[in-house]
Every structure is written in C-alpha cells, then in structure tokens.
Length: 158
Image 1 (cartoon, rainbow, N blue to C red):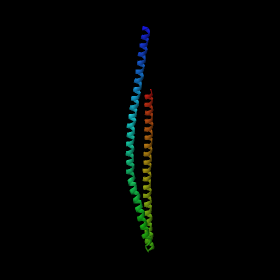
Image 2 (cartoon, one colour; image 1 turned 45 degrees about the vertical axis):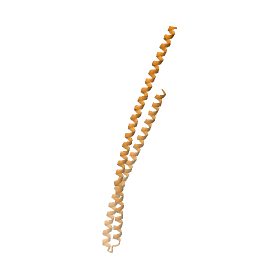
Image 3 (spheres, rainbow, N blue to C red; image 1 turned 180 degrees about the horizontal axis):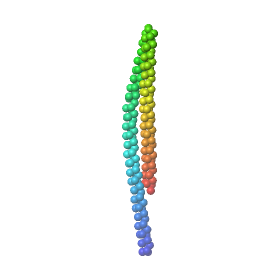
C-alpha cells in the first residue's frame, strides 16, 4: 500500500510538473503573440502616417498644376483674341506679320501645354504609386494582424 501511495504521489507530482510546463509554454507563446501584434500595430500606424504625408505631398503638387492649366487656358484666350484682331487688319502685309507672330505664340503655347501635361502625368503617376504603396502596406498589415490573431488563438487553444 505504501508503495502504491508513493507511486501515486510521484504520478501526481509528474502530472503537476507537466501541467506547469505546458502552462509556462502557452504563456510564453501568448506573450510573444501579443508582442508581435503590438509591433504590427506600430508598423501599421507608421505606414498610415507615411501615407497621409504622401497624400499631402500629392495635394501640394497638384495645386501648381491647376495653376498651370489656368495659365494655359488664359494663354489660349489671349491667342484667340490676338488672332481675331489680326484678321481684322486691312493691310495684307501687316496681317502676314501678325499671323506669323500668332503662329509663334501658338507654337510657344503648344510647348507650354505639353510641359503642363507632362507635369500633370507625373503627378498622376506619383499619386498612383502612393496609392499602390498604401494598398500594399494595408494588405501587409492586415495579413500580419490575421497571422497574429491565429498565433494568439493557437497559443490560447494550447
């Protein structure tokens, strides 16, 4: 009987030790999952801050382009007015000189318009890249969050 009681006590002691070891491992895994989740949250907040800064930069870049578009429109209006005035002149020679000037102004306007379009295209490309980076960051953060939740659930279930 004493031997059986000793065996029973040893078995209980071994079971208690095994329970304590499993509990310690589960606690360590849960703490690691919580630490990973906190790091991911910090990274997500950092990514969001960078995206907000990029959006502000894009907005700032867009404003000069709008001014350039207005300038091109104003130049077109001035060119049309100049052309109209030149067509009303009576002398053919004066009209030819004025038309040459109008053509030069039109060529200059075409160059300015092409430059404004190139700037607008660049701004759109920057915005598209920033949106793609934001989408990738959000997707990575979401994947990391889901992974952390799965790790936490796995640790909890153990």
